[in-house]
Length: 118
Image 1: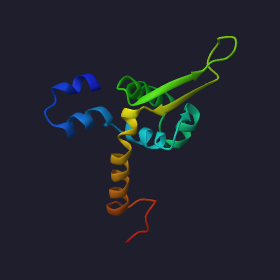
Image 2: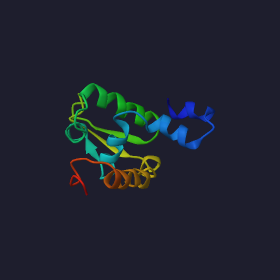
Image 3: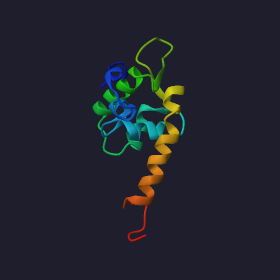
Image 4: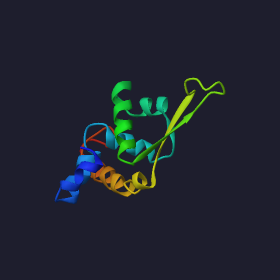
């Protein structure tokens, strides 16, 4: 669901999840919270995402105004040599919520970031 479709949602939590939900959007946003990244760096950081899926999710996040894309074009105007992605102010406003999710996960879920039984 795009940001333009959420106007029909009654609950702001439901509306937000409709925009950032799915397997890949939150990890992408989390990795962009550290600053701009080019496509290849994001692809390596978001473990398990395919190039096609990463591209689709970045386009959706860009369409919803959470991520901006900057293509660094070549002098001859050919294919960009690099494309950087960064959070917009709207996307940056999600960072505290993402941090809260990370803190909750670190405290309540078992994972490689946590000692078993801790």
